[in-house]
Amino acid sequence: MADYTVEFVGTGERLTVSDTETILSRCIEEGIAQEYSCRVGMCLACSAKILEGTVTQPAARGLTEAEREAYALTCMARPQSDLVLDRGKYPPSIEGDLAAEVDADVDGGDGDAAAADD
Ligand code: FES
Image (cartoon, rainbow, N blue to C red):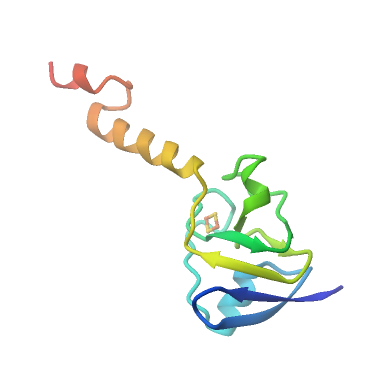
């Protein structure tokens, strides 16, 4: 087991997280206001951009393979080095998900908003 320092830029918050626990669980223990919702790596609410360092997060299903290098889902991510994170930054794939949800709300999910107006 190894302990690493996790720093959130712009907040002055810094905590120690072992490589056996998630960043989110440690935030909750320390009273740091890290956003979250599902806690199973799907909703992306707990996302943070990785500015320095590396994490392991094999169960971060909400991220594409490429996004796993640049973003940490703190509910799944365990540090593999000291980290500098920018909290509340979301990966590009969330834009597609949100667009799909809005489209589904507008037209009932058939992908053709114009047809809903007929
Ligand atoms: S809380 Fe939903 S992905 Fe982390």
